Length: 429
Ligand code: IMP
Image (tube, rainbow, N blue to C red; front, side, top):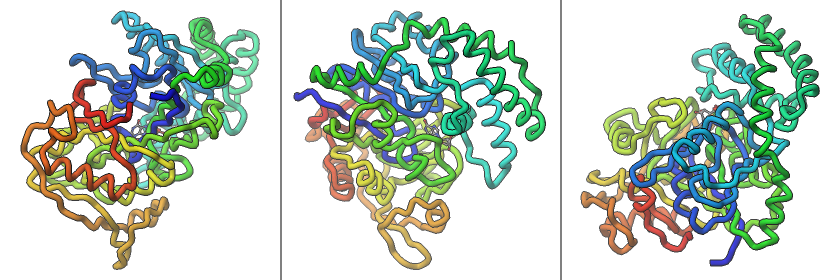
């Protein structure tokens, strides 16, 4: 297969199983890159029954000798970063080469305090349901040009100077606005200096590395975190995360030129889930939602929160496929639907009495949308050992074809179980 640059994104509200798709593609990938978000992500990879959850590190870390990059667009929580490396080391699985951009912003302890304080301030009815990992406040500082970047951690004097100024402002906000305790400089500076020392071996010019890799015809995979409907611009604002989760974020978040991208892979889960607040037209608070949550193990990888579940929303998926210019779909967790007599798919919305197939990113509009379903027959056969499309029951094949038709993109990989081996490859890798 030709070497290329792929961007992989989530087409729904996150937790589509992106980590697993990256992992199964892994043997053919040379460079794995995270480009946005931070430790709010939870990318689960299961190999040989062993479960590994990455929050910050690219999902390719399990492949020996590969290059893993944390791009400038990511917000890095150093403690989490070092913890994940240490966990891999303990398992003897730290075999990839890891490079982090000096321009990536650092999630500091005050960002996490502010994240929680702001959520409490918003209160019931207005809270976003964040993961509490300090993501929003860190990106705010980035755009306000008052953030700390990885490069700042590497120079003790500069760090002290910058942190002194930052804390003066943060402490006023923490104490006067949110009734929180002020933070002492040393309490923040001492660990930050340690993080800086520990990060030194990993910091490098990621833009240059990626350009060289592309020039050398390497297969580069930009690995999106969260998902399109949580995109800061194109998602269901304000119930979104604070980064560009769609494919477009892959360019600013890495320095890879737009013109170099060959494929955009949309990861679509066979049904819908959402964590946190915000509209979700197909949410099912009854039996079906419960079935999907239980069968699919739909509990947050980062926060443990039960995910909201419902039928597949094709209006939303179509919007994502179009917005990202997705050439191909990776369909995940098809096995979760096994055992249902019938499967519903939302193909349109009823918006104040009128039928629409248009997905409007406005939360106000989406709140008013009621799903219009089509019903497909389900299957009862165990599909978790199927390795080819043809070996799937006819009704499962039809469900896949139905998705392809309505999304307008071919399904090139199908997940039929959590393990790396439980995957049907139809030419994705
Ligand atoms: P934040 O990213 O922690 O600021 O949270 C903002 C919204 O994005 C909340 O609704 C979170 O539940 C959601 N979110 C953030 N990261 C993920 C993820 O990796 N999967 C699913 N939802 C996420």
